[in-house]
Image (cartoon, rainbow, N blue to C red; front, side, top):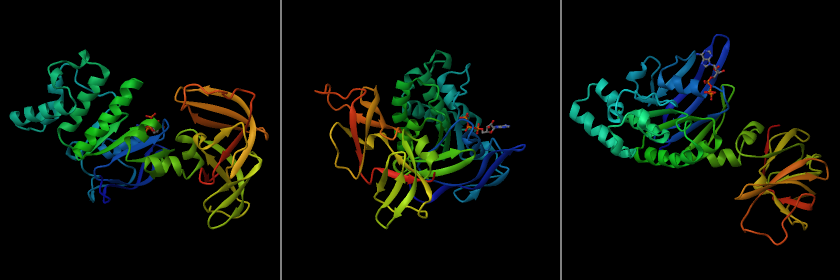
Length: 364
Ligand code: ATP
């Protein structure tokens, strides 16, 4: 498991291109041995941040410290970092093993050691049997492994990966995600992975940093980010969520009530909230935390409505329910049995319920 001492520390890191700020005053600590995911939509600045870590972009302001040392003046090849690009950037005229050994040869490592290290890396990514092949005769997944082996060959302390699985199809991506985590954990090298895919970030990351418009808006474990988003943006960005606008009606030490005309009730949450009475807030409620039934439910929070739509996803079904107020809520339910006796159908009158611990109050 990663240690707690910061391995990488970013202080006020900023990058401007002309009048445009791509990365703005980012403060961040990455721990030794962790797999940290930078997650955000297109153009939010995640690649630019990664490129500054690699030394391919010069910060406009701020500092990057690795093990306490400011690496601002250290050129890319002299950093203990390496970068793996989404395009893989393999040399087409070189065999797999020559690709993997490229950086070692350039660094002047003796032949024998180079050969041993290449063999070790190919073994790690299970590509030994294809060592003599050229990249153009490999599948996308195999190329990805070669690129990973090449990036790891020089044993960087920090590996930076820009959309490392972006070129793979869904099924292969899922398999490769787990392999990547296994390799990272086995080597204990710190990985920073850039991705726009929130599911991938949740699977890969020990911790995630959510980026928006050049800033990191929340850092946490996948569980913290999913269950305790601090803003409407993060709640909405990660997974599916029902966001209900309201105002604080009561704020006690152990619970709060949010007046929510959209839902037609005061929503009870089992935690205190920050803000004065009457302050505008939003309640974030995940679809899988809402119970749905034809009969009234015993939960702290109860509303009723009519099923408008049912989306069948195989493993779960998503019910779109129009409340009596007119507001729609999404409710997800696992399809635990193959066939129900009396399945819900569009038009059915239903009761929804959720407990005080199910929702989280975020800034509006
Ligand atoms: P994507 O997932 O689409 O690659 P990203 O989050 O990685 O997005 P960046 O590539 O970091 O985004 O770019 C952030 C912003 O900075 C974008 O608006 C981009 O157009 C701008 N930008 C990046 N590099 C340059 C550059 N060399 N000159 C000018 N603008 C740039």
